[in-house]
Length: 190
Image 1 (cartoon, rainbow, N blue to C red):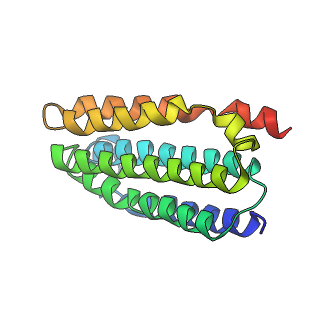
Image 2 (cartoon, one colour; image 1 turned 180 degrees about the horizontal axis):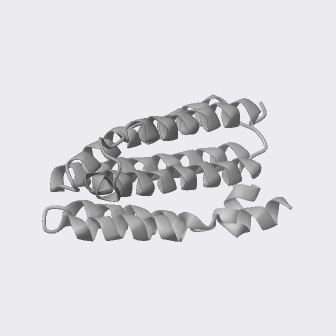
Image 3 (cartoon, rainbow, N blue to C red; image 1 turned 180 degrees about the vertical axis):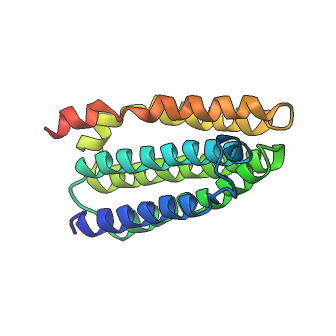
């Protein structure tokens, strides 16, 4: 079967995830800029998570531009990814509400780690369905960014118990690494 329904469903889920995150931001009870100060941790966690969901949406779109067909196993792998992404609003809110305390920041990293693993599973599932000579296989190659992301998430999770700021820097660094979508897929698809 084609990829259209899977892409439309995934787009909808990611849009809902972003909507849920923004609804968690509460309007301050004042009219001065200083009234926003208590919201800074929540705004920072929202910004980071918005960027992450945007990165997943963008790369998901690119991955499916290089995908000709899907079957049941790809549908389930995609749902697995969407499950982990759907937890982002919860861990984002918990982390922001608690000013990047170690446990919420570590759990945020666990969700990012599991989403990265789920994305990798989806990618390998598509390649297995389409074959080793598929456009996606040629585009991702050895997938150094995917492997580096998993390692960095593990380091970040461990670092939260020493200094949660280190984890925040690592989470932001991984996001920067993925911010520009992989041009190899665009070149191969065109």
